[in-house]
Image (cartoon, helix red, strand yellow):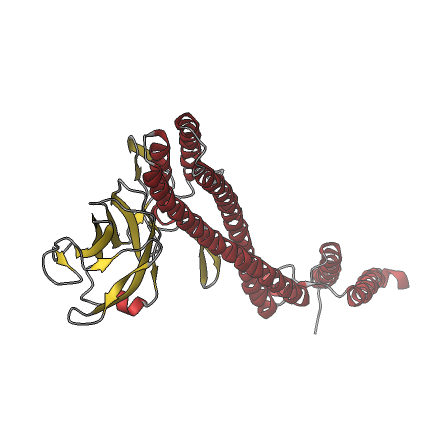
Length: 419
């Protein structure tokens, strides 16, 4: 086979270029620390590395989302802590207000302070998360959740949703709680029913009452709306229990007529149960102490929801207005119980917030472990073996030098050297 001079030079140059390219590739690998510089270097490993890189990027984003969620929940927990401290201060004032030595002026000063705490509470309920989003407005982060619509009446302008953040492949976590659940849906009384003085000219005080059997309290025949009426005649105090829905005596099943069926003694339990002809048992009772006057009455009504703002407003009104000692004691007792219910509700929400924060910590830890695994996989797929690369670099240098020297030797051959 004849080889032209041009072919010989082209072949020699091509061989040296290939050796130079390979030498440069090894140099680039060592400079970057990566075995795969282009997908052509290892198509299978390159595809696998791309999948792992994408998965790691998603995992990192979950971590960023988790940090954002933690910030929001931390802000909410801090605000709820301030709310809890505020309500505890007001609760202490309720106890202090029951001091019989206080004058009307003293109670008026307490009322002024309570109104100030009410405005402070309203400000806390309208807190933002630092990014302009209201904490307690549900989905409507840009809407101020609470306002005083009319004097003593407070409205909620958000919704009942919770804003969610994706913090895992299959986990979304709520970063706020709707204000209606935090500040407004608070049960009155003992959670089953609430007691209140309807007409109280004597010295009687009613307690919160208890439900000993929830199933009996929730019987279909229980209208959960009663009035305890008192009559005083010839030094004897009697009472009746009126079913306000039926409009008849719960004890006799007929119209209520004094003297009433039961005799009253201070401190004894008034049971919502009876054996005999007009038998019933609603599994509940209340206790009334003191001396009711003729015509005094107390109501027992199914527990409803009341917002904490109204509780503070009612407390301020009670302290600012004229009241007999019994009326003041009954009013303070009911408001005390409502404050306790509000504080319990705040504690429940705080516990839920803390639980979500602990979950985020666990997810963050799991995400860090997963990120480490991704990094190890990428290292195995992409990282360069420097010992092997150094050996290959030396080999490529020798190969290039050999190609260059052999080309120079062969290119120097000529018939004219033999003439």
